[in-house]
Image (cartoon, rainbow, N blue to C red):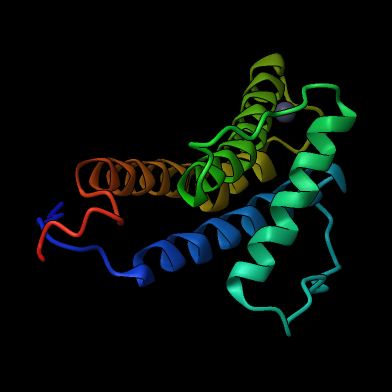
Length: 164
Ligand SMILES: [Zn+2]
């Protein structure tokens, strides 16, 4: 990947935020699909479309922090907790949920020595192939892209203006 020296355009962060939001939607949809026994007829959008990406991101993060707080884990927000760390937190949260469910799917597949009529193994395998694996790929790619941006910011702090 070519992350050259110099400044990083603000668009990069926004692009990653868009990807993080899309990734969150993909995972949400997958989890809903699995919880509804693979029968999902609702393709309803519940994102308020009128919000900008930074607004959507902060709504999403507020929900995450809220749900973590309810589970008693209470994330702290120290000084270094900037937009990049928020991204990592958000993507990590969705990624964990995705990995947990992938593991459950594998366990379910593993537990069948024979397949009864009506078991959903073939559906699970299709789902893994078509949706879960691509989502895991996106999780890895997104995580790596955020880490790259983070490294870049460390060596080129936005306030330092090394090119002046
Ligand atoms: Zn089976």
